[in-house]
Amino acid sequence: MKNLTDATAAVLRFLSSYEHYYILSHVEPDGDCIGASLALESFLKRRGKTVTLLNEGPFDRPEIQDFAPRFHTTLPQLSSQDTCAAVVLDCSDYERLGKLSSLPERLPTAVVDHHATNDSGGEFALIDPTAPSTTVLIQLIIEAAEESPTPEEARHALFGLCTDTGYFRHLDHGSGDAFRFAARLVDAGASPRETHDAIFGGHSRASRYLLARWLQRVESIAEGRALLTYQTLADSQEFAPGERDTGMLYQLLLGVRGCSVVAFVRQENEAECSGSLRSTTDFDVAAIAQLYGGGGHKRAAGFLTDQKLDEVYAELRSIIEERLVRFETGR
Ligand SMILES: [Mn+2]
Image 1 (tube, rainbow, N blue to C red):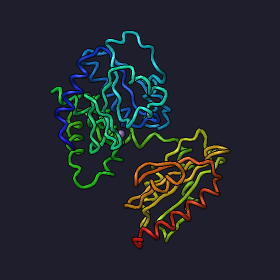
Image 2: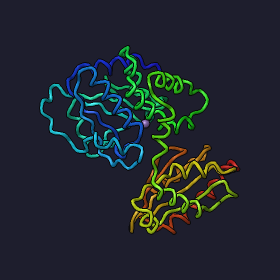
Image 3: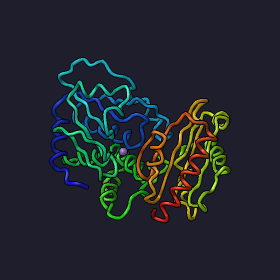
Image 4: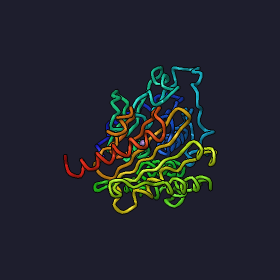
């Protein structure tokens, strides 16, 4: 990670300067932005501040659903604007705040983030694309105040760190920092076992049957180097209320010997299909998502299209097959 001493001190100064803080984070929240929001809320409160947590939602992911009642989903009425400020977490640009995106423009704002595409400058920006999670940056702020996180803060921070690193599975050589941050959180009262259960447990039985359906349909292309599957509208109706553990699908399929690319197409409604792609090599799935107006990262990308399910599935199959051959022969 970068040397963040000055940026951390500046944000800490910002967090001392106002009475009330609005903490905002990206739509479709995940464990990192929720964990970062909750850890920061606790830290500010014990320093005598008041806090409003904001996130548009939806709180679809099972591991964060219990926290949903603590978040306001719509713009608050600002009363004493002079003593209020905003902190935007885990969010590469304000558009990703959804309906709440106008709030930071009306208030003094600090930004804490680890997205490479975040170009927010400003005096109060703590941004490090090499940080494994936003919660690690919140931890830095707490530790810079010469305080240890409370057990509650440590739990929320480890929850975020484990979410964004896939419980450390996505970390590669040179990621010792993540473990040093984690070690201090465990010393401060967080439990790796409870964190694992919180992130990976709690699924409905129907979600396991849906997983079985996806697995039964898996099709192998390019001699098993890519695996494809899909979900129809009828599946969604059969396995309502539709909790989807696609993370487990990717993990199971990418764990198949020889497989390095996974594609999943889902019929969202009568008019639209979504596609999700994962890769474990330099094979660029974002470039494929972009063909459908989507995007993402080289190894994880997605898109939404108005093409029919069988159409987009067949098309995706031949695009992946063709590109995999080109990728492997280096042409
Ligand atoms: Mn994050």
